[in-house]
Amino acid sequence: MHSFLTSAALVASATVSLAAPHELVGRSTFSVEQVAAGKVFKSGPLAMMNTYAKYAKAGAVAPADVTSAAAAAVQSGQVAANPEAYDESYLCPVTVGGQTLNLDFDTGSADLWVFSTLTPSSESTGHTTYNPSTSGKIKSGYTWDISYGDGSGAAGTVYADKVVVGGVTATSQAVEAATSVSSTFTSDTANDGLLGLAFSTINTVSPTKQTTFFDTVKSTLAKALFTADLKKGAAGAYDFGYIDTSKYTGSITYVPVTTSNGFWEFTAAGYSVGTSKTTSGSIGDSIADTGTTLLYLPTATVTAYYKQVTGAAYNSAQGGYIFSCSATLPNFNVNIGGAVYTVPGSYINYAPINTAGTQCFGGIQANTGIGFSIFGDIFLKSVFAVFDETTSSPRLGFAEQ
Ligand SMILES: C[C@@H](SC(=N)N)c1ccc(Cl)cc1
Image 1 (cartoon, helix red, strand yellow):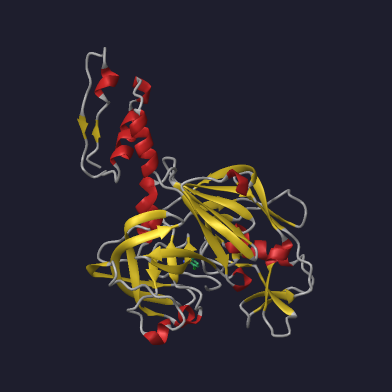
Image 2: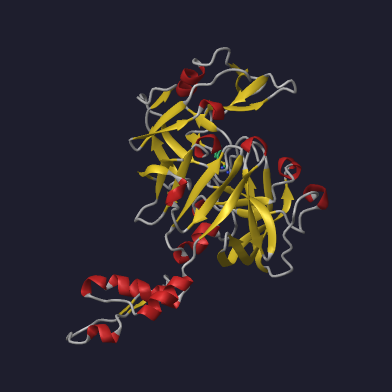
């Protein structure tokens, strides 16, 4: 995928509350509350568990068969995140209408789009394509069109089909089949499309926005969250519905998220360069973005970092800071929610830019023109990240890996 993806387009139940009669023995009254049909549970047992939970304080206890039935209806799962060269992006196997495609999970966008049999062969050669005719149900008149800041983009039509990620199933997920893709997508033949994990408010489907995979399955997950455990040069994983405590050390620190721009947007505090963990300054408004390769920070922060790298300089032809590939890079430490996370210096030696392999491109670059900082894969592969909607407002959690 691209050094970074931006998107012009993106910068983007009838629950009947009923306590079981046997629970009410000896009680004089009970109420049946009919609520608007807006909240429709996908699973009866889950709906009942919701009711028992609601009246737990009044002594309601779910019968074992309801509990076990609900347990059966609750989903969770894990999918591998396989790095492309230089960890440019991480691709995950997803079955779409029974066909397995390798998709880039992107917490910075909200469209699930795939190369398809509708994509001209001149643009899809080398890719695995989704064939909607197998089990897809067309959403007539629905279209999508996404564009990213690096000039890449894709567009197409929309189907409803079964999508499975690590065993977690969305029985009728909006699958955006590409009828055209730009050259950078065509040339990355390992990438068969994107699975957006930002907030559905920035989905590009018209005339009606569609939900992301996470939003589609969220109410059926054991916990309404997913985690990202990306690694440098090795397979990591996305987990849906649970937190695997073996994947991190210490504790998870949570910070509030603002969703007004559709991103997992948070505030990063001070930073330091090198071994000192005493941070100062303030990075400010930031997003956690698995779909962006690098770490984009305020110019003052970036200048301060590369001041500690002998020979590093901004190269306008390359569009970023470069340095000798033999340079020793200092760690980058950042304070988020009062905890300090370290990006090892070696992670910031991103990749060679010349065939001789003597000049290298920095993993930290300036956020000039973006409007916020982007904590992309350079940062995310240094931590364990929790994208959490279990509480009244979304939050991000980070822990040391
Ligand atoms: C959220 C990412 S794009 C993505 N991860 N799909 C982004 C947005 C805006 C700019 Cl300017 C640059 C990058």
